[in-house]
Structures are given as C-alpha cells and as structure tokens.
Image (tube, rainbow over all chains, first blue to last red; front, side):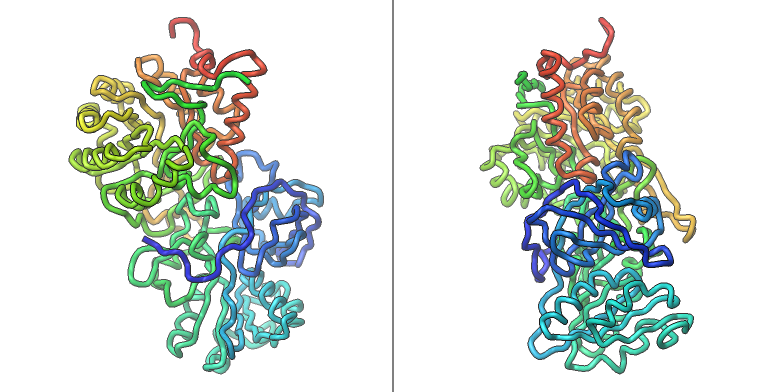
Length: 279
Length: 305
C-alpha cells in the first residue's frame, strides 16, 4: 500500500469554509485569477491546493475542483483556465459570490537542497504553484531559474510576474514568443549538477522533464495534476502509478512527489480528463 | 431535543445518520473537521481478506448531478484494519460498521470471523453489490440463492448484526432482499451504485480505465428511493436508505419512505461536513414537529403500504 510521502505534510489544519470571492481578474485567453477572502488560520504554503466549489452551484457541477494556490495568506488566489462546467462558472463569478473552500490540502514543495539552485519548469496553468514558490524563494534571496512553456504567447498567463522573481526562459510551440519548441527545449543546457528541478504542468510534459532529470541523476519534484473528488484521501480517485508497483495518491501522498517514485508509463498520462486549470 | 435513537435489529444507533462505505475512508480522515463519534455510525471502506491496490486511473469522473467511480475496492485489508484502524476508532467511541467484500463464500466467512474476534465492531455490512471488480461482488447480489448462501454462511460465523448491501442491478431486488432476510440478515442497505459510462468527445475515449463505473450522487436518488420504498413494503427487517443523500431533506425523504436510517456517501466529497450537517438537520426537523427520529420511519407511507 502507498506509504506516506517523504515530503513535507500540511502544517495548517484543513478546514472547509464558505468564503466570498474578493475579485476576479481576467488574464486573457480564458485565464482568470480568483482571489478569496478567507478567515484566519487557513494559510497555505507553496505547493498546497484547495478544493473549490461555488456555494450556489446546486447539484451540477457536483464536485469541488482541486486548485493550486497561486498566493497564500488570508486572501489567497488561484489561477484557472476555462475548460469545463466548473471553470466556466468560476470565470463568470462576481465579487461577493460565495464559494466553498476546503484547504489547505496536500504537501508543500520540499526545501531546496543545500548548495543547489532551483530550476522551475512550468506548463500552462502549472505555473500557479511554481510562481508561488518562485516568489517565496526570491523573497528569501534565492532567485530561481524558470522555464515556462505554452502553445503560443497567449498561453503564458502570469509570465511577467514570473519574470519579476526568476531568471526566465520562455518557449512556445508556435514560436510566437521566446524559443520555438516545447518547454523541454532549453533543459539540456540548464540541467547541471548544481540544480534541482520543480515542475508542474501536463503529465506528458512532466514525464519528459522527469526523464531528462533521471538521465542526469538530478532531483526532480513534480506537482501532480489528476481528477479528484474529495482532496483528502477518502475517494481514492487520484491514483498515480508508483514506480515498482501500486499507486500513490495525488492528494495525500502529494501533490508534490519525487519524480523517481512515479511510474511515468502510459497509464499515468492518458488523455486529459480533468478540466484544464484544475489539478 | 428529540430522541434520535434508532433501532436496527438488535443494534441501537444514537441517530439515523451513517456514512457510506467507500466515501469516508476508515473514519480517521475527518479529525480536522468534526468528531465522527457523533454520527449514528460509519461504514468502513470495503475490507477484503488481503489488501488491494484497486483499479488503474482514471477511476472517477463527474456526470450530471453525479459521478462515476471505478475504484476497484482499494483497501488496507481486514488484518491491517483490525490492527491499525479499529483500535483508534474504538478508543474514540465511533460506531463502526465494517463493510466487507470477497469473491468467494469462504473468504466472506474468513473476514467475518476475523472481525468477530475483535471488539468495537457494531455490525458487518456485506458488499454483495460492487459493480467495479471483475470477480466477486455483484454476482452474489444478483442471484437470490447466492445472496442467501453468503448471508447464511456469514451469519453462522458471527453474533454481530449482519447487514446486506443491495445491488440495484438485481433483476428481482425484492427477491434477493427477501432471500437475505430468510437467511438471517438483520437489515438491508439499499442501494449500491448503478453502472454507467462516460466518453470524452474531445479525445474520443471512454473516460474510465475500467470502462464502466458506479453512478452515485443526486442523479441516483429517485431510483434509490423507489427501491427503498419497495423493500420496506416487502421486508420485516429494517432497510437503510442510501443514494444521493446530500441534504437533511433528502435524508428525511428516505425515512418517510420507511428507511430506518440513511447513509451519506458522495456528499462527503462535496462537503466533508455533510453527514454532520444532516445529523443536526434531522434533529431540528424532528424537534420542530415534536417527533422522535424513529417516528419519521415510514411516515410518508399510506396506512398498510
């Protein structure tokens, strides 16, 4: 059976509250940042997530959506991309609208090993937990390297914010911004013994990053994105194949998991079934 | 405060709200939320003789007013449960209904015997209705003879109250339930999920790796209510209602139809506090009408139905 993750566990007791949307900022191209007004005591750390659901959604959509924290504190925000019913409603939400927020959930990004420089690899809305991490690292005086990729320049929400706190490399598949190609393009040059990798994005992207890191023996932490019903270990709907057999659960063993403990074979990156922007 | 106690066979529950197997872990995952000892009881994740990893992903997807799941009965196994989970539950005074699952009568009996040797188990619920595993489970729940055989064998192996969880896919669900009653079941739970499917039109692929999954949630509720109604009319033993109970009103609806208690399942995912809110809500509903919880049972049925 899965063992508990070796990474840091949640430090704040999880709670479910009804909290108002404070503001919604459109980032263009179906990306939105939603900021909530939470009571004291629900502060999340980088890497953690929340289950988010409109308090007035009724029976459909039924389940809350897992969302990484983009910022922490009592007024935390999340980044969404409109894809399905849940995110459509979130993208239409107006300030004051009540949401059910359950969090903070899952573990945090682990500390960077002494002497190593963090290298963040982000794809699409996977930028959210990495931007939160980059801001924390930067304010602690440790400016990370970051690689951020998208299909086009329109798929790079918050890239300016990321540039403020990192040494940023951008890639786009259509070449409309930065280097033309996938997010893995600059990695061969950047992956040295001096770095540790933190990645979040589509499964196939993370699998490719994990493979490059494994080949060079570089530590790589992946923040997993899977469908979830509960977010706290009872539905067992978020398994990820574990290297050597069995499963890890993204909600309770992760979402931040050492990439070498995951079996990145086909089973783990079937066609996307979660709404984009959802973990 | 109205009396919320409920009698299920020889077992007295402090109130009529339980949590459904597979939606509440082993009850220990709720420490941050509320004291689960306040519930009428918790039904554990289905326990098998040996631990099980469960099905490959994807295991769940959302559907209109419901969800499909094909978890595949991932669980820690009865031995680990007895050693690691049950002692904590016992210490906290939680009313534990051990939900068990096997692919043979012999294994059903072995798990029952293992639980019989422990203190702190209030009842055993036989899962003869899981739609998501290739071997065992649902075939016991479809056939009155097989269902009766499992029930009788387990009944002979324990003094604990025995509940049998009904499959809505039995051709003759009343027949299966009656066979279980005749074989010594102390109560039946109705209903388990109904198999469904979903295809992602953007990828053209079936969403669940298991292809089909059990439908749960509000979409299931009218079907569950109808089956509970039918079973209450046909059986002498208590019926425990389950299927899309999300609110106090949903729970009351099942009790008015004749359910002696309800199980809250998928609602735990939307709101971890759901079962506790429903427990408090039923008490309020009763208090406002000067009723005890047990007086709600069957109150919606015409005389003699």
